[in-house]
Length: 468
Image 1 (cartoon, one colour):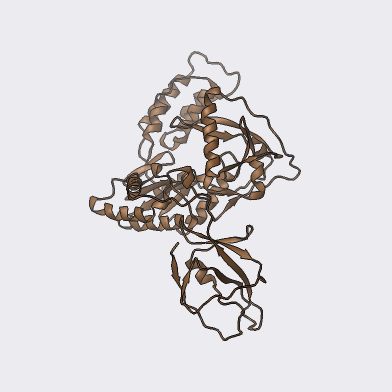
Image 2 (cartoon, rainbow, N blue to C red):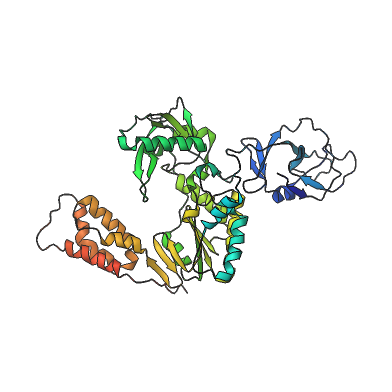
């Protein structure tokens, strides 16, 4: 690594301690140490360049280390660190863990970029309209320092060190092995490629036998690509629910609106950045025509995954939530004045770096006067509807098919704050969600359908109420 950390040592009398040097909490903070107590190791360093420390039993023999030099290199051969000191009794034994520093063995090799590749990646990070031409270089310098936060491929994705996902079952839960669902033959090639990609990225591993087995289903993303989902409904039914609260979307919008400058960021495959506790990984086993596999990282579909990820984001940004950042799962918004925005971005990047989290550059834009957040447009003028979503709703044909009607009312209902007397206007339609209701001449359902669409198209920009 070639990293040197300067440390001040307090010289002790001979015989006072048996170890060549003790490195306490101040040093651990400086080198950004992260503990993995269950696995028996620690990591030192930030970002993509870290070293791994195996913890050896405390009575393991220690080879002397020359401690006369005041510089401390992370890659030196042996160190010792205090874990607990009894300050009340000078004669009490110091509880120390002796650690042998080994070369880090990451899941994937650190990405080494040529100057051309570096510049190409830098150009893919979007800067918004609120940044003046004279300010762009400062933004680019920030992006250069934190280019490793932006992930462009599965293989570059690292898992965060601050939290792991647990799958705790209810008492008496019995494992269930499900048979695979029938698959559209047109999807086979794409699904096989995705399985290979997940294996290559280290997200899943092959399983020979598991008590829990779930089938896969295929969904189509907005961009037309396929997404492999696992039907974890049986597992979720047997899982103890984590009631960690998700933030209210409208409360986030109310706090974020009416600001000068915004940045919008999105985690790269956010859930996949969280590891599953090793003992619970086999519970995620799923079956495919090419074998059975289990997840090492948190997939979509687990009932407590949103709670785990929201808890992680709240821990990462806890000091600044409600001050200049708000987070909803892997979508977050930095907001404030133009004067402070660059510093706020740097603080955000520092926190992400400490957690070893990754961003999706294709879904990030920094320094905007307005932008899309949680399906709404936020700006210094207030809160508006997303024009793209409104356009799709506007083009929907009238139908009393219960499934289509439920979908229409769900989409329109998301923007109910923008439609005066929404419930009253929608009432002629909601009655057709019940079974055995027939359409009769003179019914105002068609008229209500048109009124809701027209109200949404001409919806106002909302101002916040006076909270005083």
